Length: 265
Ligand SMILES: C[S@@+](CC[C@H](N)C(=O)[O-])C[C@H]1O[C@@H](n2cnc3c(N)ncnc32)[C@H](O)[C@@H]1O
Image 1 (tube, rainbow, N blue to C red):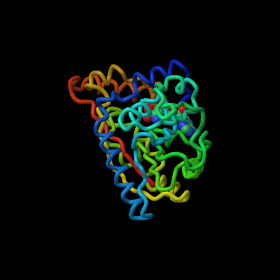
Image 2 (image 1 turned 90 degrees about the vertical axis):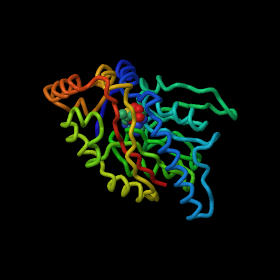
Image 3 (image 1 turned 45 degrees about the vertical axis):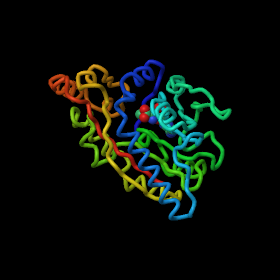
Image 4 (image 1 turned 45 degrees about the horizontal axis):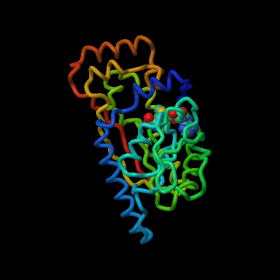
């Protein structure tokens, strides 16, 4: 488990340095759509009932929403209501709001934690957990809480790095010592076991690319060590060596980075 105390300055830096530009998320949009569709089909086979997926008017819980980059993307892409749950006040303050539809806010930002979600039983149609698994101290409790908050058959969409699967992450490419931190994260099998105990079944695991910045040069200029638990865990020497590698790379090259999408329902 890793911890960063997100004060206002760190939250603002997080938004600038860590939020992926929307144009860089096209593959994520497609991967989410495909995974949700496949999960809805699996629900039909299991229960003869189709879950609504991410359709306008449905509710997505964004757990550990940070500064709301994905909350806004999910709302804009799919017309869903997003309930963004985030414990750090400074991060929550930066979550964009969206105009109400059907008398409900497009994006609502609430204080809460993964193991104590401030939402009613069985009200949500999907959950999104972006880069947050390793911040949650009690993952089995969080899985039970998600089971309570979600409708039957609703997908849990997890975007994370996992031990043994992180080679194509940009931070790992330029700061290879970050692998030591990632090796301490829950494995895919471990996460699936925690969620299985709460009644979820593994549906899909795919690696998905993103363009973290318009180019590697941009990426190097935006990088802020304080906003990233993996970079903070490095020694100063390892961090500086990584920055030197990054500055020596072709600044016009794409800043493509890969992370996993793990889906349970
Ligand atoms: C690396 S950020 C990810 C933010 C956002 N999901 C994203 O993809 O940009 C991790 C977030 O998890 C939040 N967090 C920490 N502990 C948490 C917990 N127990 N439950 C939910 N969120 C938590 C932090 O405050 C932080 O905003």
